[in-house]
Image (cartoon, rainbow, N blue to C red; front, top):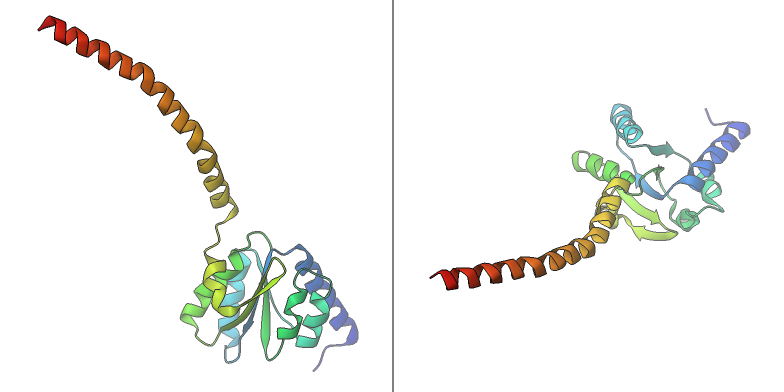
Length: 174
């Protein structure tokens, strides 16, 4: 039985609201996956705060209209599931990449990141994006390096003086 007009409107609004807040999106073909397998994917996505939804293509086109993922509109064909990353841009890539390793029937069609449409083969790049904590750690390490080098350099001057005085003292004693 099909969806009523009100149910379709509610689904479009829900997906559009998620798309407005999402950082990245992936469209994947799920043809041939069983319901139990799809439940496993949904559970993995829920743990990583990834919104996963099977939406009819016409409804998906309407849902992404006016969002940063409008570039995806022309690619909607066939049975697709949409996955939006809500906290971490790379989370959706990691979830779908891990799942597609064990389930070859899940085929990643395309990725949308920052308003740009990328082919599904770029899922590795998306999956390798650092999490927020990893990115902050890299930033702090980058900011700390020049200060640490300056401290080492400044500490070397008195150290060299002490070693020179010690060498002169040893030379006078012998």
